[in-house]
Image (cartoon, rainbow, N blue to C red; front, top):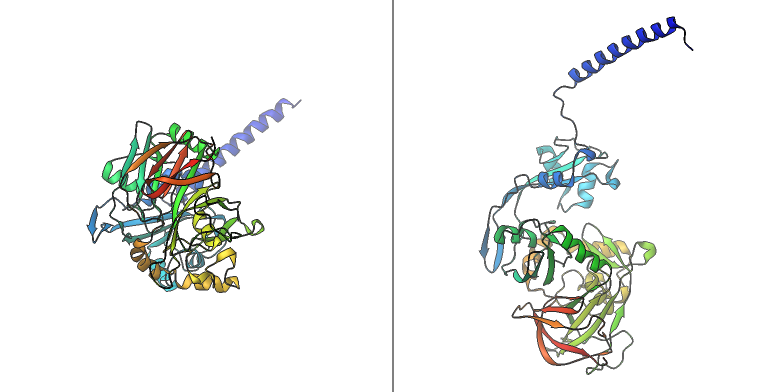
Length: 443
Protein backbone atom coordinates (compact mmCIF):
# COMPACT_ATOMS: atom_id res chain seq x y z
CA UNK A 1 0.00 0.00 0.00
CA UNK A 2 2.86 2.37 -0.79
CA UNK A 3 2.05 5.74 -2.12
CA UNK A 4 3.29 6.53 -5.62
CA UNK A 5 5.83 9.05 -4.28
CA UNK A 6 7.31 6.41 -1.92
CA UNK A 7 7.76 3.94 -4.74
CA UNK A 8 9.53 6.52 -6.89
CA UNK A 9 11.88 7.47 -4.05
CA UNK A 10 12.62 3.77 -3.33
CA UNK A 11 13.53 3.07 -6.96
CA UNK A 12 15.85 6.08 -7.06
CA UNK A 13 17.58 4.93 -3.85
CA UNK A 14 17.94 1.36 -5.20
CA UNK A 15 19.58 2.59 -8.44
CA UNK A 16 22.10 4.68 -6.46
CA UNK A 17 22.87 1.67 -4.23
CA UNK A 18 23.49 -0.60 -7.24
CA UNK A 19 25.81 2.00 -8.80
CA UNK A 20 27.80 2.28 -5.55
CA UNK A 21 27.97 -1.52 -5.23
CA UNK A 22 29.27 -1.94 -8.79
CA UNK A 23 31.85 0.77 -8.16
CA UNK A 24 33.01 -0.96 -4.98
CA UNK A 25 33.32 -4.34 -6.71
CA UNK A 26 35.29 -2.79 -9.58
CA UNK A 27 37.67 -1.19 -7.10
CA UNK A 28 38.04 -4.47 -5.18
CA UNK A 29 38.92 -6.39 -8.35
CA UNK A 30 41.48 -3.76 -9.34
CA UNK A 31 43.16 -3.88 -5.93
CA UNK A 32 43.41 -7.70 -6.01
CA UNK A 33 44.39 -8.07 -9.63
CA UNK A 34 47.44 -10.27 -9.99
CA UNK A 35 47.29 -11.49 -6.39
CA UNK A 36 47.78 -15.27 -6.22
CA UNK A 37 44.99 -16.97 -4.31
CA UNK A 38 45.65 -19.85 -1.94
CA UNK A 39 44.30 -23.14 -3.21
CA UNK A 40 41.07 -24.19 -1.54
CA UNK A 41 40.09 -27.77 -0.87
CA UNK A 42 36.78 -27.27 -2.67
CA UNK A 43 38.59 -26.18 -5.84
CA UNK A 44 40.99 -29.13 -5.89
CA UNK A 45 40.07 -32.69 -6.68
CA UNK A 46 42.02 -35.81 -5.77
CA UNK A 47 43.17 -36.00 -9.39
CA UNK A 48 44.57 -32.46 -9.07
CA UNK A 49 46.57 -33.58 -6.05
CA UNK A 50 47.90 -36.64 -7.88
CA UNK A 51 48.90 -34.47 -10.84
CA UNK A 52 50.58 -31.96 -8.53
CA UNK A 53 52.48 -34.70 -6.71
CA UNK A 54 53.89 -35.99 -9.99
CA UNK A 55 55.53 -32.65 -10.73
CA UNK A 56 59.00 -33.52 -12.01
CA UNK A 57 58.37 -37.18 -11.12
CA UNK A 58 58.25 -38.49 -14.68
CA UNK A 59 59.60 -42.01 -15.08
CA UNK A 60 63.34 -41.91 -15.76
CA UNK A 61 63.99 -45.63 -16.16
CA UNK A 62 65.03 -48.73 -14.22
CA UNK A 63 68.43 -50.34 -14.01
CA UNK A 64 69.60 -53.60 -12.44
CA UNK A 65 72.46 -54.01 -10.02
CA UNK A 66 73.47 -56.91 -7.74
CA UNK A 67 70.09 -58.58 -8.05
CA UNK A 68 68.17 -55.39 -7.27
CA UNK A 69 65.85 -53.23 -9.35
CA UNK A 70 66.73 -49.54 -9.01
CA UNK A 71 65.22 -46.30 -10.34
CA UNK A 72 67.27 -43.54 -11.95
CA UNK A 73 66.96 -40.56 -9.51
CA UNK A 74 64.48 -37.79 -10.39
CA UNK A 75 62.92 -34.62 -8.99
CA UNK A 76 59.62 -35.06 -7.20
CA UNK A 77 57.13 -32.94 -5.24
CA UNK A 78 55.34 -34.49 -2.28
CA UNK A 79 52.00 -32.87 -1.47
CA UNK A 80 49.51 -33.15 1.37
CA UNK A 81 46.50 -31.13 2.45
CA UNK A 82 46.40 -29.91 6.02
CA UNK A 83 44.91 -32.60 8.23
CA UNK A 84 42.42 -31.65 10.91
CA UNK A 85 44.88 -32.44 13.69
CA UNK A 86 47.43 -30.06 12.11
CA UNK A 87 45.20 -26.97 12.20
CA UNK A 88 46.59 -24.39 14.62
CA UNK A 89 49.96 -26.13 15.02
CA UNK A 90 53.37 -24.96 13.81
CA UNK A 91 54.46 -26.51 10.53
CA UNK A 92 57.97 -27.17 11.89
CA UNK A 93 56.57 -29.18 14.80
CA UNK A 94 54.33 -31.21 12.47
CA UNK A 95 57.19 -32.05 10.12
CA UNK A 96 59.43 -33.06 13.03
CA UNK A 97 56.81 -35.22 14.76
CA UNK A 98 55.04 -36.92 11.87
CA UNK A 99 57.55 -37.18 9.02
CA UNK A 100 60.77 -39.16 8.69
CA UNK A 101 63.35 -36.40 8.88
CA UNK A 102 66.60 -37.23 10.69
CA UNK A 103 67.14 -33.80 12.22
CA UNK A 104 64.94 -30.77 12.76
CA UNK A 105 67.79 -28.59 11.43
CA UNK A 106 67.37 -30.28 8.05
CA UNK A 107 63.70 -29.30 8.03
CA UNK A 108 64.60 -25.69 8.87
CA UNK A 109 67.09 -25.59 5.98
CA UNK A 110 64.49 -26.95 3.56
CA UNK A 111 61.95 -24.35 4.67
CA UNK A 112 64.43 -21.48 4.39
CA UNK A 113 65.59 -22.71 0.99
CA UNK A 114 62.01 -22.89 -0.32
CA UNK A 115 61.96 -26.64 -0.93
CA UNK A 116 59.17 -26.91 1.62
CA UNK A 117 56.25 -24.61 0.78
CA UNK A 118 52.64 -23.99 1.73
CA UNK A 119 50.18 -23.09 -1.02
CA UNK A 120 53.09 -22.66 -3.43
CA UNK A 121 54.83 -20.01 -1.29
CA UNK A 122 57.79 -19.96 1.11
CA UNK A 123 56.65 -19.63 4.71
CA UNK A 124 58.45 -18.53 7.90
CA UNK A 125 59.80 -21.05 10.39
CA UNK A 126 57.01 -20.25 12.87
CA UNK A 127 54.22 -20.69 10.30
CA UNK A 128 51.00 -22.08 11.77
CA UNK A 129 48.96 -24.44 9.58
CA UNK A 130 45.42 -23.46 8.58
CA UNK A 131 42.53 -25.46 7.19
CA UNK A 132 42.87 -26.22 3.44
CA UNK A 133 46.61 -25.41 3.37
CA UNK A 134 48.49 -27.43 0.75
CA UNK A 135 51.91 -28.59 1.96
CA UNK A 136 54.60 -29.23 -0.67
CA UNK A 137 58.11 -30.67 -0.46
CA UNK A 138 60.29 -30.84 -3.57
CA UNK A 139 63.43 -32.95 -3.55
CA UNK A 140 65.76 -35.00 -5.69
CA UNK A 141 64.36 -38.46 -5.09
CA UNK A 142 66.49 -41.59 -4.77
CA UNK A 143 64.08 -44.49 -4.42
CA UNK A 144 64.98 -47.53 -2.37
CA UNK A 145 65.76 -50.62 -4.45
CA UNK A 146 63.63 -53.77 -4.52
CA UNK A 147 64.37 -57.33 -5.55
CA UNK A 148 64.82 -57.74 -9.29
CA UNK A 149 62.05 -60.33 -9.54
CA UNK A 150 59.55 -60.51 -12.42
CA UNK A 151 55.84 -59.89 -11.87
CA UNK A 152 54.33 -63.12 -13.16
CA UNK A 153 50.90 -62.78 -14.77
CA UNK A 154 48.89 -65.73 -13.46
CA UNK A 155 45.60 -64.93 -15.18
CA UNK A 156 44.27 -62.22 -17.46
CA UNK A 157 41.11 -61.47 -19.40
CA UNK A 158 39.31 -58.29 -20.47
CA UNK A 159 38.11 -57.58 -16.91
CA UNK A 160 40.66 -58.86 -14.45
CA UNK A 161 44.39 -59.30 -13.97
CA UNK A 162 45.92 -61.66 -11.40
CA UNK A 163 49.63 -61.27 -10.74
CA UNK A 164 52.18 -62.87 -8.42
CA UNK A 165 53.70 -59.96 -6.49
CA UNK A 166 57.35 -60.45 -5.47
CA UNK A 167 58.55 -59.74 -1.97
CA UNK A 168 59.99 -56.25 -1.21
CA UNK A 169 57.65 -54.51 -3.69
CA UNK A 170 54.89 -52.20 -2.37
CA UNK A 171 51.50 -52.23 -4.10
CA UNK A 172 50.98 -48.45 -4.46
CA UNK A 173 53.32 -45.44 -4.40
CA UNK A 174 54.02 -44.66 -0.74
CA UNK A 175 56.77 -43.36 1.52
CA UNK A 176 60.16 -44.17 -0.02
CA UNK A 177 58.66 -45.81 -3.11
CA UNK A 178 56.99 -44.49 -6.26
CA UNK A 179 58.14 -46.14 -9.50
CA UNK A 180 59.39 -49.24 -7.65
CA UNK A 181 55.82 -50.31 -6.89
CA UNK A 182 53.52 -52.91 -8.39
CA UNK A 183 51.16 -50.53 -10.21
CA UNK A 184 54.02 -48.39 -11.56
CA UNK A 185 56.11 -51.34 -12.77
CA UNK A 186 53.04 -52.75 -14.54
CA UNK A 187 52.55 -49.33 -16.15
CA UNK A 188 56.19 -48.64 -17.04
CA UNK A 189 57.12 -52.12 -18.26
CA UNK A 190 53.87 -53.73 -19.37
CA UNK A 191 51.81 -50.62 -20.30
CA UNK A 192 48.88 -51.51 -18.02
CA UNK A 193 46.93 -48.28 -17.41
CA UNK A 194 44.08 -47.33 -15.08
CA UNK A 195 44.39 -50.49 -13.02
CA UNK A 196 42.26 -50.82 -9.88
CA UNK A 197 43.99 -52.92 -7.23
CA UNK A 198 41.27 -54.73 -5.31
CA UNK A 199 43.25 -55.72 -2.20
CA UNK A 200 46.74 -55.20 -0.82
CA UNK A 201 49.70 -57.18 0.46
CA UNK A 202 52.46 -55.95 2.76
CA UNK A 203 55.62 -54.84 0.99
CA UNK A 204 57.62 -57.83 2.26
CA UNK A 205 54.90 -60.37 1.39
CA UNK A 206 54.73 -62.20 -1.91
CA UNK A 207 51.56 -63.65 -3.36
CA UNK A 208 48.53 -63.27 -5.58
CA UNK A 209 47.05 -59.82 -6.16
CA UNK A 210 43.66 -59.30 -7.83
CA UNK A 211 43.47 -56.23 -10.06
CA UNK A 212 40.39 -54.93 -11.85
CA UNK A 213 40.76 -53.53 -15.35
CA UNK A 214 37.56 -51.53 -15.02
CA UNK A 215 35.41 -49.97 -12.31
CA UNK A 216 32.54 -52.49 -12.42
CA UNK A 217 34.80 -55.54 -12.06
CA UNK A 218 36.78 -53.98 -9.22
CA UNK A 219 33.60 -53.02 -7.34
CA UNK A 220 32.07 -56.46 -7.89
CA UNK A 221 35.03 -58.33 -6.42
CA UNK A 222 35.49 -55.74 -3.65
CA UNK A 223 31.88 -56.34 -2.66
CA UNK A 224 32.52 -60.09 -2.53
CA UNK A 225 35.49 -59.48 -0.22
CA UNK A 226 33.42 -57.13 1.98
CA UNK A 227 30.62 -59.72 2.15
CA UNK A 228 33.14 -62.40 3.24
CA UNK A 229 32.64 -64.42 0.05
CA UNK A 230 36.41 -64.43 -0.51
CA UNK A 231 38.77 -66.12 1.94
CA UNK A 232 42.44 -65.18 2.20
CA UNK A 233 45.15 -67.64 3.17
CA UNK A 234 48.82 -66.93 3.82
CA UNK A 235 51.83 -69.14 4.45
CA UNK A 236 54.33 -67.99 7.06
CA UNK A 237 57.59 -69.51 8.29
CA UNK A 238 57.81 -68.90 12.03
CA UNK A 239 60.39 -69.50 14.74
CA UNK A 240 60.03 -72.65 16.86
CA UNK A 241 57.63 -75.60 16.76
CA UNK A 242 54.22 -73.97 16.43
CA UNK A 243 51.46 -74.87 18.87
CA UNK A 244 48.52 -73.24 20.60
CA UNK A 245 48.90 -71.48 23.96
CA UNK A 246 47.04 -74.30 25.76
CA UNK A 247 48.51 -77.22 23.84
CA UNK A 248 50.86 -79.59 25.68
CA UNK A 249 51.03 -82.21 22.92
CA UNK A 250 51.40 -81.56 19.21
CA UNK A 251 49.35 -83.82 16.97
CA UNK A 252 51.29 -83.70 13.70
CA UNK A 253 48.88 -86.07 11.94
CA UNK A 254 45.84 -83.85 12.51
CA UNK A 255 46.87 -80.43 13.82
CA UNK A 256 44.21 -78.28 15.44
CA UNK A 257 43.56 -74.71 14.36
CA UNK A 258 44.75 -71.98 16.71
CA UNK A 259 42.50 -68.92 16.64
CA UNK A 260 43.64 -65.47 17.73
CA UNK A 261 41.03 -62.72 18.07
CA UNK A 262 43.05 -60.02 19.81
CA UNK A 263 42.11 -56.46 18.68
CA UNK A 264 44.80 -54.51 16.83
CA UNK A 265 45.48 -50.77 16.85
CA UNK A 266 48.05 -48.18 15.86
CA UNK A 267 51.02 -48.09 18.24
CA UNK A 268 52.94 -45.35 16.45
CA UNK A 269 51.95 -43.65 13.20
CA UNK A 270 55.40 -42.28 12.38
CA UNK A 271 57.05 -45.72 12.54
CA UNK A 272 54.03 -47.46 11.02
CA UNK A 273 53.78 -49.97 13.86
CA UNK A 274 50.64 -51.67 15.15
CA UNK A 275 50.13 -53.80 18.24
CA UNK A 276 47.60 -55.77 20.24
CA UNK A 277 45.51 -53.06 21.86
CA UNK A 278 42.18 -52.95 23.76
CA UNK A 279 39.26 -51.53 21.81
CA UNK A 280 38.99 -48.85 24.50
CA UNK A 281 42.42 -47.59 23.36
CA UNK A 282 41.63 -47.70 19.64
CA UNK A 283 42.07 -51.40 18.86
CA UNK A 284 39.87 -52.87 16.12
CA UNK A 285 38.37 -56.38 16.13
CA UNK A 286 40.75 -58.82 14.42
CA UNK A 287 40.69 -62.57 13.90
CA UNK A 288 43.17 -65.02 12.39
CA UNK A 289 43.28 -68.82 12.33
CA UNK A 290 46.56 -70.77 12.17
CA UNK A 291 47.33 -74.40 11.31
CA UNK A 292 50.90 -75.82 11.35
CA UNK A 293 51.85 -77.65 8.16
CA UNK A 294 55.49 -78.65 8.40
CA UNK A 295 58.10 -78.47 11.16
CA UNK A 296 61.75 -78.04 10.24
CA UNK A 297 64.00 -79.43 12.96
CA UNK A 298 66.84 -77.31 14.39
CA UNK A 299 69.96 -77.23 12.25
CA UNK A 300 72.35 -75.75 14.80
CA UNK A 301 72.72 -75.62 18.57
CA UNK A 302 70.47 -72.99 20.08
CA UNK A 303 68.14 -73.09 17.08
CA UNK A 304 64.50 -73.82 17.96
CA UNK A 305 63.62 -74.93 14.46
CA UNK A 306 60.98 -73.45 12.16
CA UNK A 307 57.36 -74.19 11.32
CA UNK A 308 55.49 -73.55 8.11
CA UNK A 309 52.07 -72.25 9.15
CA UNK A 310 48.89 -71.79 7.12
CA UNK A 311 47.12 -68.57 8.12
CA UNK A 312 43.51 -67.68 7.38
CA UNK A 313 42.35 -64.08 7.75
CA UNK A 314 38.82 -63.27 8.85
CA UNK A 315 39.58 -59.54 9.07
CA UNK A 316 42.11 -57.41 7.21
CA UNK A 317 44.05 -55.23 9.66
CA UNK A 318 47.49 -53.87 8.86
CA UNK A 319 50.23 -56.41 9.78
CA UNK A 320 47.53 -58.69 11.22
CA UNK A 321 49.25 -62.03 10.53
CA UNK A 322 52.61 -60.77 11.75
CA UNK A 323 51.26 -59.35 15.01
CA UNK A 324 49.02 -62.32 15.84
CA UNK A 325 51.95 -64.69 15.30
CA UNK A 326 54.08 -62.46 17.52
CA UNK A 327 51.29 -62.61 20.10
CA UNK A 328 51.42 -66.44 20.11
CA UNK A 329 55.18 -66.33 20.65
CA UNK A 330 56.05 -67.55 17.15
CA UNK A 331 57.17 -64.44 15.20
CA UNK A 332 57.87 -64.73 11.48
CA UNK A 333 61.47 -65.58 10.68
CA UNK A 334 63.55 -62.46 9.96
CA UNK A 335 60.60 -60.08 10.41
CA UNK A 336 62.39 -56.74 10.94
CA UNK A 337 59.41 -55.17 12.71
CA UNK A 338 57.82 -57.72 15.01
CA UNK A 339 60.60 -60.27 15.62
CA UNK A 340 62.73 -58.22 17.97
CA UNK A 341 63.66 -58.02 21.66
CA UNK A 342 62.88 -54.30 21.43
CA UNK A 343 59.33 -55.36 22.30
CA UNK A 344 60.48 -56.98 25.55
CA UNK A 345 62.07 -60.16 26.90
CA UNK A 346 59.53 -62.37 25.13
CA UNK A 347 59.54 -60.35 21.88
CA UNK A 348 56.04 -59.15 22.69
CA UNK A 349 54.43 -62.59 23.15
CA UNK A 350 50.90 -62.36 24.60
CA UNK A 351 51.16 -58.57 24.44
CA UNK A 352 53.73 -58.48 27.24
CA UNK A 353 55.35 -55.38 25.82
CA UNK A 354 58.17 -53.40 27.33
CA UNK A 355 56.97 -50.95 29.97
CA UNK A 356 56.44 -48.09 30.28
CA UNK A 357 55.08 -47.34 26.81
CA UNK A 358 57.54 -44.45 26.37
CA UNK A 359 60.45 -46.86 26.89
CA UNK A 360 58.99 -49.27 24.33
CA UNK A 361 58.65 -46.53 21.74
CA UNK A 362 62.18 -45.28 22.45
CA UNK A 363 63.62 -48.79 21.97
CA UNK A 364 61.68 -49.32 18.75
CA UNK A 365 62.63 -45.88 17.41
CA UNK A 366 66.33 -46.40 18.14
CA UNK A 367 66.52 -49.36 15.76
CA UNK A 368 64.04 -47.97 13.27
CA UNK A 369 65.29 -44.49 12.47
CA UNK A 370 65.85 -43.44 8.87
CA UNK A 371 69.50 -44.56 8.77
CA UNK A 372 68.69 -47.99 10.21
CA UNK A 373 65.75 -48.31 7.84
CA UNK A 374 67.85 -47.59 4.78
CA UNK A 375 70.37 -50.23 5.84
CA UNK A 376 67.67 -52.76 6.68
CA UNK A 377 65.74 -52.10 3.48
CA UNK A 378 68.50 -53.77 1.47
CA UNK A 379 69.95 -56.26 3.96
CA UNK A 380 66.48 -57.56 4.85
CA UNK A 381 65.74 -58.63 1.32
CA UNK A 382 66.64 -62.02 2.73
CA UNK A 383 63.63 -61.62 5.04
CA UNK A 384 60.82 -63.85 3.98
CA UNK A 385 57.48 -64.87 5.27
CA UNK A 386 58.23 -67.70 2.83
CA UNK A 387 61.23 -68.93 0.93
CA UNK A 388 60.15 -67.13 -2.22
CA UNK A 389 60.37 -69.65 -5.06
CA UNK A 390 57.75 -69.24 -7.76
CA UNK A 391 58.04 -72.47 -9.69
CA UNK A 392 54.54 -73.48 -10.72
CA UNK A 393 50.97 -72.28 -10.42
CA UNK A 394 48.15 -74.65 -9.56
CA UNK A 395 44.40 -74.07 -9.66
CA UNK A 396 42.52 -76.48 -7.42
CA UNK A 397 38.76 -76.83 -7.05
CA UNK A 398 37.52 -77.15 -3.48
CA UNK A 399 34.09 -76.42 -1.99
CA UNK A 400 33.90 -73.02 -0.33
CA UNK A 401 32.56 -74.54 2.89
CA UNK A 402 35.37 -77.09 3.15
CA UNK A 403 36.35 -77.53 6.82
CA UNK A 404 39.40 -75.71 8.14
CA UNK A 405 41.57 -76.56 11.11
CA UNK A 406 41.10 -79.68 13.18
CA UNK A 407 38.61 -81.05 10.64
CA UNK A 408 41.24 -80.98 7.89
CA UNK A 409 44.00 -83.51 7.32
CA UNK A 410 47.28 -82.44 5.79
CA UNK A 411 48.73 -85.30 3.83
CA UNK A 412 49.96 -86.77 0.58
CA UNK A 413 50.43 -84.46 -2.38
CA UNK A 414 52.91 -81.59 -2.29
CA UNK A 415 51.99 -78.34 -4.01
CA UNK A 416 53.83 -75.10 -4.69
CA UNK A 417 52.04 -72.11 -3.16
CA UNK A 418 52.72 -68.41 -2.58
CA UNK A 419 52.35 -66.01 0.30
CA UNK A 420 48.70 -65.30 -0.39
CA UNK A 421 46.05 -67.76 -1.47
CA UNK A 422 42.63 -66.54 -2.47
CA UNK A 423 39.65 -68.82 -1.95
CA UNK A 424 36.93 -67.47 -4.22
CA UNK A 425 33.51 -68.97 -4.68
CA UNK A 426 33.96 -72.63 -5.59
CA UNK A 427 37.70 -72.66 -6.17
CA UNK A 428 40.96 -71.84 -4.44
CA UNK A 429 43.81 -70.27 -6.39
CA UNK A 430 47.19 -71.51 -5.27
CA UNK A 431 50.54 -70.36 -6.48
CA UNK A 432 54.52 -70.50 -4.98
CA UNK A 433 56.08 -72.54 -1.87
CA UNK A 434 56.04 -76.15 -0.73
CA UNK A 435 53.03 -77.14 1.35
CA UNK A 436 50.80 -80.17 1.71
CA UNK A 437 47.35 -80.33 0.20
CA UNK A 438 44.44 -80.79 2.59
CA UNK A 439 41.17 -82.59 2.16
CA UNK A 440 38.12 -82.51 4.41
CA UNK A 441 37.78 -85.46 6.76
CA UNK A 442 34.03 -85.44 6.13
CA UNK A 443 31.96 -84.64 3.01
